[in-house]
Length: 143
Ligand SMILES: [Cu+2]
Image 1 (cartoon, rainbow, N blue to C red):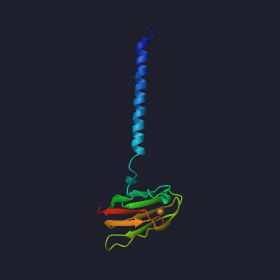
Image 2 (tube, protein in one colour):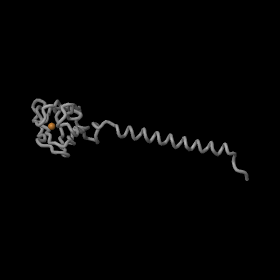
Image 3 (cartoon, rainbow, N blue to C red):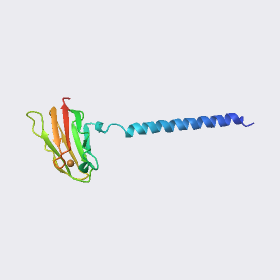
Image 4 (cartoon, rainbow, N blue to C red):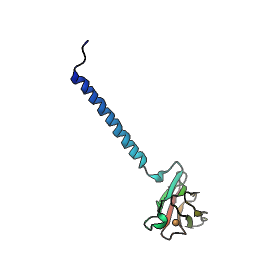
């Protein structure tokens, strides 16, 4: 009917503390990888291109990423989102030989998105008509 030795009690307390710390560290590492995973992976079937805030007034910025490669049936639906406060455009300037230029989005206002699905393989190029330094390319590969 005696209490366990004091050393044993504090020892198991330390073990529990260490287990809790390990769980917190693992949760932190998991959260880090979740939050920093590549955005271009997007959701199934999709790819994303962002226009970051300030791109319209900073020539060091561009469509992000400005060059992507997608695969038909995997991630060939591309969504452009304008996170900037100014209007941009997604204007296609070239498409593979024999393929019509995608419609694009002449005026992509602040907060707006434009989604296009490219179903013919090859290289597509686009730019923003408002900002000469903004241009990008999309390589579409067969599924
Ligand atoms: Cu622009």
